[in-house]
Length: 396
Image 1 (cartoon, rainbow, N blue to C red):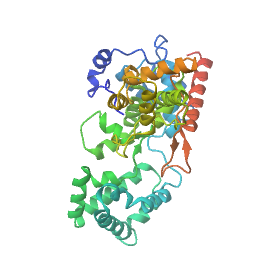
Image 2: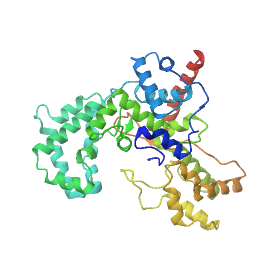
Image 3: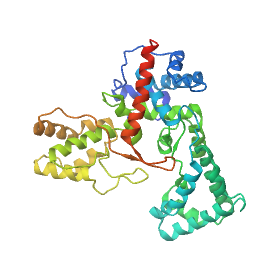
Image 4: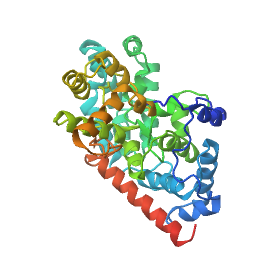
């Protein structure tokens, strides 16, 4: 989901944005900028240390070059409030019980997916033994896991478990397994993948690290107030999209960059080809690590069939190349995207659709039940509108 226009080094941000030639995507750039005191007044009064949160939001948005108008600030406030109620390391109800169930349900699945049954079973056996008997049978890691209340506590406990395994157990199987997957086994097994006050995925933070250090230090940074805001604001705001409503950016925050635009692309494809694709916003198939799969998605297959019927001179190879840009703004410049716009206007007589709500289910060990992207985006949008009304009421 990395945007080609995003800079790796933040000090080069303004130059990078200029080079991309697209800075007019932030909401209402001509509106007055807010200062720290005004931002503080927009944060809900129930929040502790509002001044500190406001200062960090001001400093980070200024560092990124984001116009500090009420639209953008309210967008940030709404996501933070939805994800954590402005708590850097929030407690999660029943987290310990959910964590234990997650381990029991997926212990071998995590390994067998790529490592094969034999190695997976060996590593799983080591892990189960450690959980039940270490550091002592009376105070084993499984019982400690049941007592955790915050995701940071669970995260740190997992790191302690795998550190223990590497020091005390036969590690040949673990070493071989790590080589096969090309990554740290402890990181692969860690169920805490979204962290901090804005619940940013660890893989996104790794792509956009603000400082050096290992994965443990990055995780600790995400649990800090500043670090959680830094990566969350980056993830929410630092990509161009021509959405006419903030709710679509909130949907993207949950289901992936440009998923609202891509779901609209799928909806137009459905109308042209008279089919019923899921509007999930993914035009290709992806593995759990985010890599593209060679297998064709339903969207890709539908495009190949449609262009063959319509005698459109875009080859399957070109379609695949174009779809690989689906997580970027420049997908809109591809022949595939432009042809669907043309065919939609021609076949339906309607204006093209730029964004619709993606139909994606949200699930995970930190949730009491499954939700969907519409639920998330609508909740965030409600907080956004409340913030905007507050700004109007206090004449900001």
